Length: 507
Image (tube, rainbow, N blue to C red; front, side, top):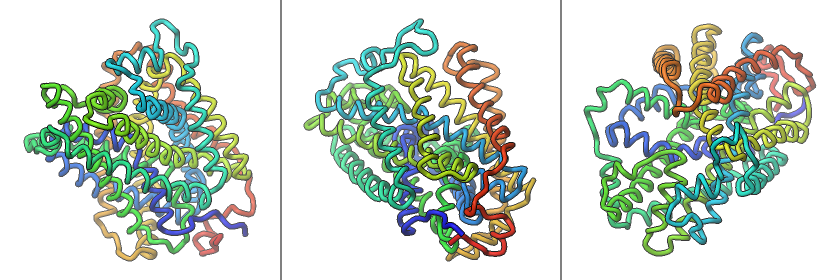
């Protein structure tokens, strides 16, 4: 029986999983979410969410992939034929994310180059939207392609697909062995330098000062769960796919805890670095930290260039380090995202990795051009918001309910992971996945649905949101049902559920 690709070592798998989890959101989302939701006190619901939702789901997905030896659709199909659509839904979510995530990495590449001459000048916001992205009113839904985005976007896709062509061990694992240590080293340089800046203590005080009253606010707890969910790369096929390349005796529980705590450690490190720098900006500008704190694209491409302009000594090098970190964090995550549908295409249609990369990666690269147009930033904003809130979050809710209450697979999953792991998980794991996580994700879904039905996101036009928001989220689900209806082009590498249960593994 043909062998399924495998990681070269446990360290290779863990680094790849960490590379997937550690992405742009760790650097520009977590610090601001923590600051907005109680500062130091936010670490309590954050840790609680990590232990009751993040790690339990990570263990579940690691076990599903390793146990059923397939991409997300194949794994769900082996669990129950009626569940296959869930795997394709997750792959559709990953596909959509890859189309715009690649564009943000392209921005970061350009800004890494801009850092050497501080090309954004004294008005980084105007430079970003007018000079770089060339956003224009009235250009319709797309407008012209922007050369400053298109060229680095080609570099992003050429790099990503070249790595994926090489396979799991010689491509993904090798890339993460190089990129993750480099990312950590570069970011440590940023943090160490940031801590020496005048005003750093002001930023750290704002980041860590606990607002204990915030713990009484349910929205803070929901925010913690929401961030953990998006941060760990769960519920959109990545961790199932990566774990399917593990040996059948690999330790699941230790790998899950190492991955989760490494991701959280980097997030806290990012918070220290970002807020130390924001404290410097606040003090040097004579304003409060609340006037300079920001998250998302605004933090990375507007606030940080402003900070770099006034940075004392070697500001060009500091800019290079920051945007270089965004590129590395983005590339390691993009590799994992694209691998989900490469693996899905391979399994479903029984084609070679090369063909799957060309078809899946090529189509995603082509569609990403939409976000490299003059109105690309607005389209990106809408797609990102809806595919996260009505894609990943809802997929997570459906997954835990299906595994816990519909197919009742949690006892089997727990038994398997306890057999292969050094330490065992108990009833707390089952309770979290059957009760705690569904309740929290259900609350998130109701809140998001109510908010978006009563007001337009970002004050964007209804027609625009219907085209690039709601429709994208709905079509991802429809795609899941459509592709799952197609017959499997089975080959010798396809194992039935019975064969898996009998231990006839493809190792």
